[in-house]
Image 1 (cartoon, rainbow, N blue to C red):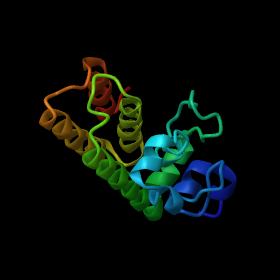
Image 2: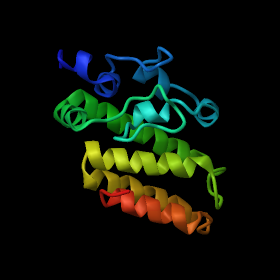
Image 3: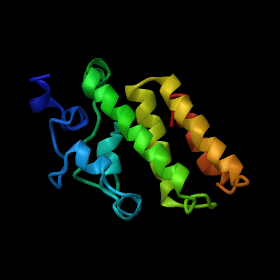
Amino acid sequence: MEDMAANSAAAMFLTGEGHDHRGRRLADVLALDDSALERSHDYIQWLFPLPEASRFNASAPVLRSDDIALIRADGKAGANLQRARDRMLAFYSENDHWLVPFDHNHLRITRIIRCLALCRGIEEAESFHRRILALVEAAGGPVNQDSLRYWREAAQGGG
């Protein structure tokens, strides 16, 4: 992992060895309370990096194919990605403000699913997707069809 320092801010952050653009480490972000997670819009791109530059956080890492390989190969990065997934699942399970037709959290959910598919595999992405859908269904299905489609495509490795 020593080469990772020079090559991958995303992988370094996910191992807990690096920090984001504000100096936060993974543990700092995972310790944020639900209110802070909702208010802050610049952590999700670090917890769940993607191959595309973020339109909302120019300081966020852009995931390259070698970054994905590093994250997949490093047990600590994988375990921390699962911790991040679990934290966000707890956030969505304990809050219902996102269970409306349109909400910025729908974009976050798409990001989480896509990152899991890329860095942990389709099974992990599908598992998170199913758990989110169960929350949506329990709330009477208030989420718009476009978001549901994006989530489905992301869980299948697309999107």
